[in-house]
Amino acid sequence: MPLAKPQTMMTEKIRTLLAEMNALEDELATTLREQQSKMFFLIDGKRIEFERTVREEHRKLKTNLFHWLVTYRPQNLLTGPIIYGMAIPLLLVDLCISFYQATCFPIYGIVKVRRANYFIFDRQHLAYLNIIEKFHCTYCAYGTGLIAYCSEIISRTEQYFCPIKHARKMLGNHQRYAGFLEFGDAPDYETKLEEYRLALGRTD
Image 1 (cartoon, rainbow, N blue to C red):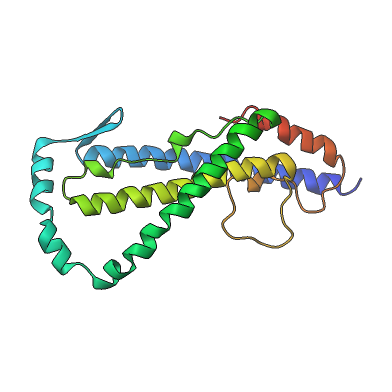
Image 2: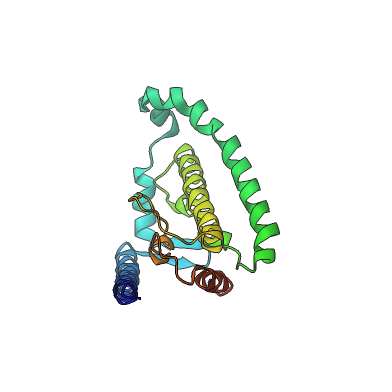
């Protein structure tokens, strides 16, 4: 019983820090929107429109495809087959994780992760990139988006089955990890676990 008060204080501190983090994220999003307006482009649905003068400047900056191939770093060309060969395992992971979510999340009562929030393909609107550079950017956007998409699906799964922090410090924690139970916080574990599970049904 004497441990209850320190644990409660720690929980409140974590909630306060998480609230501050959310506020900072909102401030960052606002700042990024303001920066976008200074870059003279507008987002119209899935389209991104630059001002005419900006578009013209971008076209002037685009590297000629032949010149780009001649001056391109040879080590990048040599490793190209390896990099793009990774598309096969990436697609396989995408297929498997999407199948898992589609079949298991409804059974668990977990809200599905919205794919469109993680796969953003907008760099093709940049006129200063040639066709190969745009292809590179699309591939990178898919890879990083897939990792983030998988991370969110797995983090919701972890919250459902085992929302407990590790005893040792771990790098690269997902966003849900900060709100997990402390290592060794045994009292009322099953009750708390059920609360974590119910919360997943309200996840946005």
